[in-house]
Amino acid sequence: MSCAPADIVGSWLHSYEEDSQTTAVYRPPDHPFPPSRRVRRGLEFRADGVFVDLRPGPDDRPRPVVGRWRAEEWGRIRVAFPSGRDAPLELTVVSCAHDVLVLAK
Image 1 (cartoon, rainbow, N blue to C red):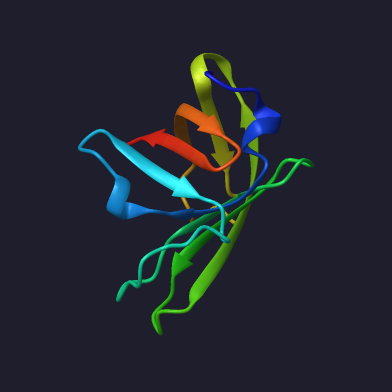
Image 2 (spheres, helix red, strand yellow):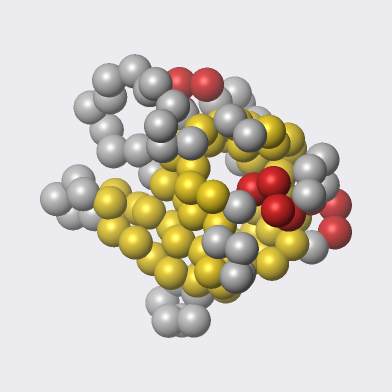
Protein backbone atom coordinates (compact mmCIF):
# COMPACT_ATOMS: atom_id res chain seq x y z
CA MET A 1 0.00 0.00 0.00
CA SER A 2 1.30 3.46 -0.79
CA CYS A 3 0.05 4.60 2.61
CA ALA A 4 -0.51 3.14 6.07
CA PRO A 5 -3.95 1.78 6.99
CA ALA A 6 -4.31 4.62 9.53
CA ASP A 7 -4.04 7.11 6.63
CA ILE A 8 -7.37 6.03 5.16
CA VAL A 9 -9.29 6.23 8.46
CA GLY A 10 -12.03 8.82 8.15
CA SER A 11 -14.93 9.74 5.89
CA TRP A 12 -14.56 10.11 2.13
CA LEU A 13 -16.96 11.24 -0.61
CA HIS A 14 -16.60 10.26 -4.26
CA SER A 15 -15.20 13.12 -6.33
CA TYR A 16 -16.23 11.49 -9.61
CA GLU A 17 -15.25 14.60 -11.57
CA GLU A 18 -11.62 13.71 -10.84
CA ASP A 19 -11.86 10.01 -11.78
CA SER A 20 -9.77 8.55 -14.56
CA GLN A 21 -10.49 5.45 -16.57
CA THR A 22 -8.64 3.34 -14.00
CA THR A 23 -9.04 5.22 -10.70
CA ALA A 24 -11.79 6.61 -8.46
CA VAL A 25 -11.01 9.71 -6.38
CA TYR A 26 -12.44 10.35 -2.91
CA ARG A 27 -12.18 13.55 -0.85
CA PRO A 28 -13.10 14.49 2.75
CA PRO A 29 -16.71 15.71 3.19
CA ASP A 30 -15.53 19.30 3.79
CA HIS A 31 -13.87 19.45 0.35
CA PRO A 32 -15.35 22.24 -1.84
CA PHE A 33 -17.13 19.94 -4.31
CA PRO A 34 -18.80 21.50 -7.33
CA PRO A 35 -22.61 21.28 -7.40
CA SER A 36 -23.86 17.87 -8.51
CA ARG A 37 -27.23 16.51 -9.53
CA ARG A 38 -26.30 12.99 -8.48
CA VAL A 39 -25.70 11.75 -4.97
CA ARG A 40 -22.06 11.23 -4.05
CA ARG A 41 -21.16 7.80 -2.78
CA GLY A 42 -19.36 7.84 0.54
CA LEU A 43 -16.92 5.56 2.34
CA GLU A 44 -16.04 5.63 6.01
CA PHE A 45 -13.14 3.67 7.47
CA ARG A 46 -13.19 3.68 11.27
CA ALA A 47 -10.09 2.91 13.33
CA ASP A 48 -11.93 0.06 15.09
CA GLY A 49 -12.42 -1.81 11.77
CA VAL A 50 -15.98 -0.68 11.10
CA PHE A 51 -16.67 0.25 7.46
CA VAL A 52 -19.66 2.28 6.32
CA ASP A 53 -20.57 2.33 2.63
CA LEU A 54 -22.90 5.25 1.94
CA ARG A 55 -24.88 4.26 -1.15
CA PRO A 56 -27.54 6.28 -2.91
CA GLY A 57 -30.93 5.10 -1.69
CA PRO A 58 -34.20 4.96 -3.64
CA ASP A 59 -35.02 8.55 -2.62
CA ASP A 60 -31.46 9.80 -3.36
CA ARG A 61 -30.55 10.06 0.31
CA PRO A 62 -27.43 8.13 1.33
CA ARG A 63 -28.18 4.66 2.69
CA PRO A 64 -25.50 3.33 5.08
CA VAL A 65 -24.39 -0.29 4.68
CA VAL A 66 -22.15 -1.34 7.56
CA GLY A 67 -19.36 -3.89 7.39
CA ARG A 68 -15.85 -4.59 8.65
CA TRP A 69 -12.58 -3.69 6.92
CA ARG A 70 -9.01 -4.89 7.20
CA ALA A 71 -5.81 -4.01 5.38
CA GLU A 72 -4.15 -6.76 3.40
CA GLU A 73 -0.92 -6.87 1.39
CA TRP A 74 -0.19 -4.76 -1.69
CA GLY A 75 -2.58 -1.94 -0.81
CA ARG A 76 -5.68 -4.13 -0.71
CA ILE A 77 -8.51 -3.42 1.67
CA ARG A 78 -10.95 -6.26 2.29
CA VAL A 79 -14.49 -5.39 3.37
CA ALA A 80 -16.99 -7.96 4.61
CA PHE A 81 -20.67 -7.29 5.23
CA PRO A 82 -22.10 -9.43 8.04
CA SER A 83 -25.65 -9.16 6.75
CA GLY A 84 -24.76 -11.61 3.98
CA ARG A 85 -26.89 -9.63 1.51
CA ASP A 86 -23.93 -7.67 0.19
CA ALA A 87 -20.95 -9.28 -1.51
CA PRO A 88 -17.52 -8.64 0.05
CA LEU A 89 -15.51 -5.80 -1.45
CA GLU A 90 -11.84 -5.75 -2.29
CA LEU A 91 -10.52 -2.22 -2.69
CA THR A 92 -7.05 -1.35 -3.94
CA VAL A 93 -5.51 1.87 -2.66
CA VAL A 94 -3.47 3.60 -5.36
CA SER A 95 -2.51 6.57 -3.18
CA CYS A 96 -3.68 8.58 -0.21
CA ALA A 97 -3.00 11.84 1.54
CA HIS A 98 -4.85 13.89 4.13
CA ASP A 99 -7.16 15.32 1.46
CA VAL A 100 -7.37 12.66 -1.26
CA LEU A 101 -7.87 8.90 -1.45
CA VAL A 102 -7.40 7.24 -4.84
CA LEU A 103 -8.75 3.74 -5.39
CA ALA A 104 -8.37 1.46 -8.40
CA LYS A 105 -11.61 0.90 -10.29
